[in-house]
Length: 111
Image (tube, rainbow, N blue to C red; front, side, top):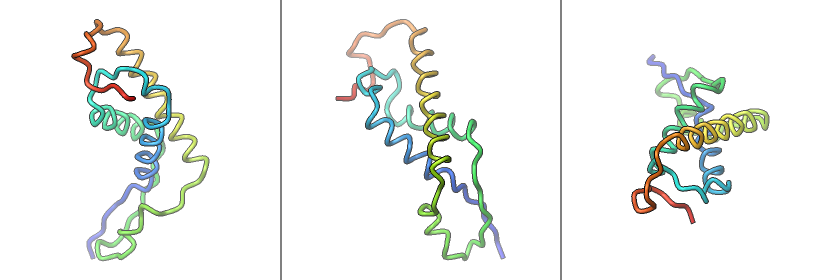
């Protein structure tokens, strides 16, 4: 039987990134990256700084469809949230070192 490895932490990371980008005051900032690139950068940052839970399953296993709904601990959510906030702070710090762009050249302005 063919086996696959799935990352059980990825859905938590994606959920927390979406939640933070929608609700945090960072949306009043002008991002120098397009939103999709910002999201992708935060995913990579989180994956490299969070201990991920993985699971090996059979490729024919019906549970592969429901892995996104696997329960995760509050501690895991809090850890992922902290890492994502750290990643945003890092990106804002790096953006401050870049020369300023005129407003018309910015990629995203959250309302």
